[in-house]
Image (tube, rainbow, N blue to C red; front, side, top):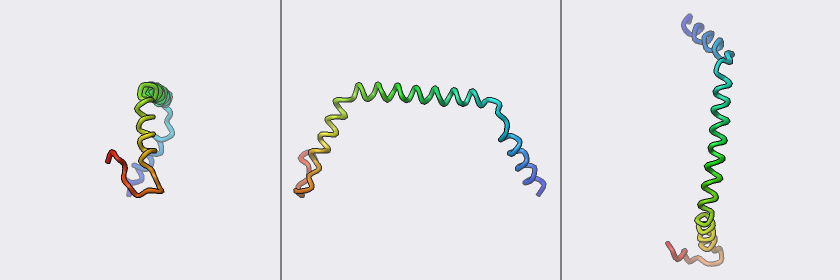
Length: 72
């Protein structure tokens, strides 16, 4: 029982420490900025491919007819 009490006390004492919190926040913020830049570049470069894919999927969805898509 003493070990469990020691572990809980140790965890509680370390949860309230703020050392390194700024570094973690800057890292997360940098990752968010990098993800936004990559998403912007990918969407700009692959815009025609994404539009082609969306129109192909739209052409395949036909609720009036039970025939499958031509590409399948």
